[in-house]
Length: 113
Length: 123
Image (cartoon, rainbow over all chains, first blue to last red; front, top):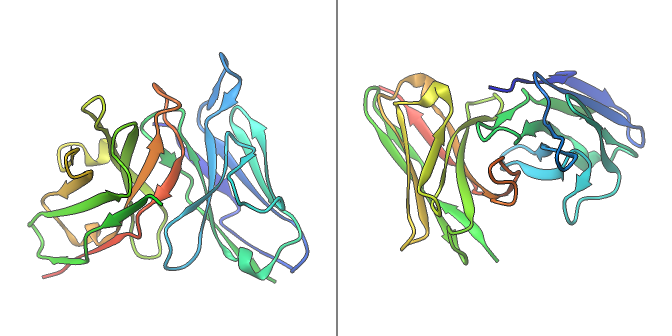
């Protein structure tokens, strides 16, 4: 199975600043024939199911604020949250869907400093 | 709007089985894969397996192969997930999640989730 590893496990960022979360896959999730990365980012708030933020590594889901952005390709990816707001406090997960044996990163807990 | 409506919380004894349902309200199972993802208390997300009713195929995470059975009834637009030989380690919230078949034969991201079903395993 493809192992997804996130870093850091937790981070605290001041309001208005930028949060950066990294995700590494044990093998590529880039399909060369269409140049698409099969990588999604989710946000999960307490007591709620996860919500997709980005797919294809960098495509924002409809309704997601543009302060959420994604980058990377192949095996290394980054989720960037700029101008951090209080409502962004959550746990963030990356997930690969290159293999149909889907796997998630362990999660990164984002708090306000 | 389409929603995934899951069955209610369950309390089970160790060694027993539990079957959780996920009904597609306002939509159909066709053209989608339904996966099951669990989350133990204070822990991360763990994909268990999925079913593509259109093709009649199921895929399971190696960890759950043989102990988890995922099925679907297209006539009621309902997917099911049964876990047998329960232990306290299976205490978790179980989510169903939908993904499109756009990426077939690869997977796709989960664009719709149920609210979750808490399964508590306790003697």
